Length: 470
Image (tube, rainbow, N blue to C red; front, side, top):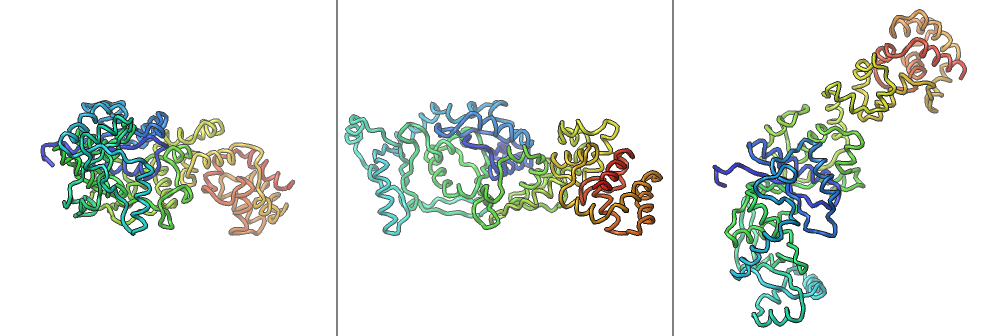
């Protein structure tokens, strides 16, 4: 790479669905590398699959990237010198490169039908051979090509892979890589409908847009020699490639919904915080010396290609929840309040807003938990579940009668619980569990001393008396 060239990474998704964790991690690693090297992070939309690509998915992935804080410096919306950044609008650019390859004899039309190719693949598989194109149309004469065109056949365009060559490159994660051209077979550059194949448009756009570093999943490793052949045949620059390990479930199979994986949109709607996802994804297949929550700049500063592992990265929902808790603990109070949502805002008195947030902050993971505690502290009647009713019944009427008397003289929870202890001769769990259950409906949660300060004496008395009636 020319040292005078500003490093440029890219994220090039296909808008065929909502962005999932694996794609988001690829975007993150590219963004971190760009920031770490003071370069440019580019977003390109690879929407050549017109049947599956949808505009709503493109907008959604852009919103999700922006929400995560992965802001691209070149691409849709922000523009740049290499527009357009949607591949569907770049067919006129690809046309000239098809022509250059054809004129140089590096590409040729192929008239083999899908049925013929399938029969060939099955025959190769039966012989224990890797499936690859046999080269049937490789040596058609101009007259034979013209005859087939006159018959109305729509050919694909194949790259003429040179024989007996070794394609080598140094992968930023996996080290030295070597492929033999004879194992590849002539591959398609342009489909019969005129749309570009991934190998072609992806490589051409990387070169034309000045991408210097490509970080992508290891499932693309076998694509790299094909793309290098295309770029070398055209005299275009070849970026530095790094192939990162895929994310797998606990059973080692590719991550899917059955492992609990959700799209970034689903995670966002469920209340996950962007910083939690960034810290979790940055450690999926990449190691940091720091175990604490890092902000985006710290994540980028300490990012290093040499710390990307080759082994599959295992999805762990508990680790994701750990970073969610860390992010909530670090969240600014006003941001935390907005995150809790309108339903919580409607229940919590303005005078108790700050105290409420700081009381429940260590005990919540999602907005729904904040709503649960807002109801438990500020809303009546308090509904007890079966487990809570059992605890109340076991404590007995006398316990709660004495608690009502003790409440009238209590200044805080410590004096209240001490008075109940003295009056009932209860201690430990037999003392504190019935009191917590009667006042909050829960068997665990924030410190009772802080909850006590948030609840009015009238509300607490009413709840204790309800337990006597029960």
